[in-house]
Amino acid sequence: MSCNRSGNGREIIAYINDPSNGIFQEKERTGLQVQVQYIPTDLQVLSEYAGRPGRKALDSSRKQYDSYAYFKLVLTDAQVKPRETDAAHLDFGLMDDFYLQLNNGNVIPCTFYQRIPTGDKHRYEFMVVFEKETDGGGPVRQDFRFVYADKVFGMDSIAFNFRHKDLQNIPQL
Image 1: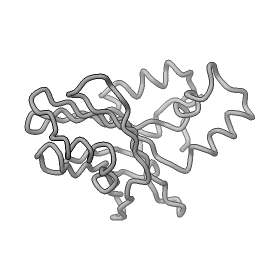
Image 2 (image 1 turned 90 degrees about the vertical axis):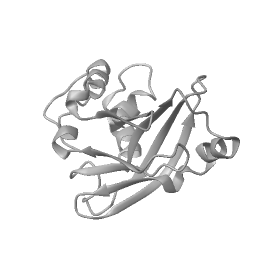
Image 3 (image 1 turned 90 degrees about the horizontal axis):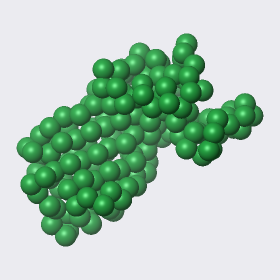
C-alpha cells in the first residue's frame, strides 16, 4: 500500500480512530453494538517495538505483516449474555463467521482470529486476520466489505464497507 503521508505512531492511531476516515466503523443491530477497525501494517510493526524501529527492522517487519489484513472487532451487548455453548463458539467457532467480500467478487475467508480478554462480560474483542490474495487484487488494493455472519447474538449478517482510497490515506512510518 502506498501512501503520500508519513507520520508517527500517534498520527497513525489518531487517523484510524477517527470515524470520518472510514477505517473505524460501528453499527448497532438488535441491541448489539459492532465496531470494526482496520489495523494497518505499520501499526502492527509498532506493536513489536518500544519506539520507532530502524529502517532495516521496519522493512523486515513490514514484509512479515504485509501478507495479511488485520482487523479489530468489538461486540458490546449490555442486555444479553451468551449461553455457555455460545461463549465457547466465541472462543473457538468464529472462523467461518468472518469473511471479506472483495469488489471484484472474490471472497477471502478468515485465516485466524483471537479473542482478546476485556474483563467485561458484555464486551467481546477479537483480532481477525485475513490472508491477502497473492495476485495483487486482494483487500487494501480495492474496495471491500468485512462481513460478520453472527451465530451467537441473534442478528443477521452485518457488513462494513472499506474503501481503497481511505486505506491509501493512512499515514505510514
